[in-house]
Amino acid sequence: MANTTAPAEALIPPRFLFRFEVDVKRADSIWTAKEGVVLDETYRLPNLADLDSERSPADVRMAWNENGLAWWIRVEGKEQMPWCRESRLDESDGIQLWVDTRATTNVHRATRFCHRYVFLPRGGGPSAEEPVADQMLINRARENARPVRPRELQVKSRVSESAYELSCCIPAIALNGYDPLGQPKLGFTYALFDRMLGLQTFSIGPGFPYEEDPSCWAQARLV
Image 1 (tube, rainbow, N blue to C red):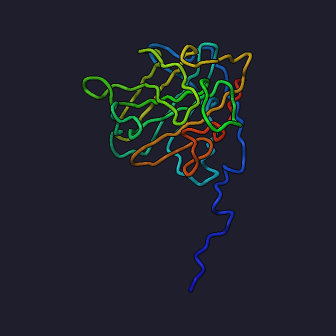
Image 2: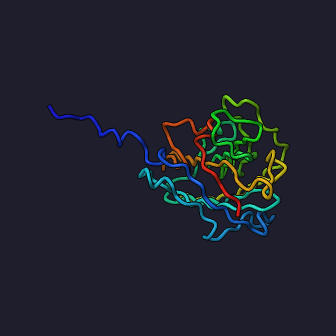
């Protein structure tokens, strides 16, 4: 009978063996009313999922300035419109972002400096075709971040059956403790979910509690 036991090292995803720190560039402007977020390739985040041989359908770019944080995301290779429901944020196609303004990556429960936001390319408004931006609670948090007020988060999207783009901006007012000069390191991760293309994560991926445990997040150094 063949031995079907996998080697021990195959049971540990390569990303679990490292603590990642990435540089995030400053942008003079992180949001425009007409175009949303405009970031060239120099703002692209490294694709850490490649280390685990995960499929990576998204190009994710990130920038900062004193006014807040911004992301530009493009997802390609789709064969249908993204499935998004404002009433079912966890199940919708889109991106979730976790930010810890104190970069406390040695704790296992979120503090009031930890934030979780979700951005969807569609699913909002009377026709369910408008992009969605919302805040989500972090499970088991010691203390929740301040609830955001309506329209504090900013989002724009371009959607087709084969691809979509998202412009996302979290202003400084929605990031408790945000101090890019005094505290230039952030705890950070993301999870991009697509029903057809699967899950793309930044730091540690499936099988680990990255949704709630800040020690699973990478560090973003604001440069």
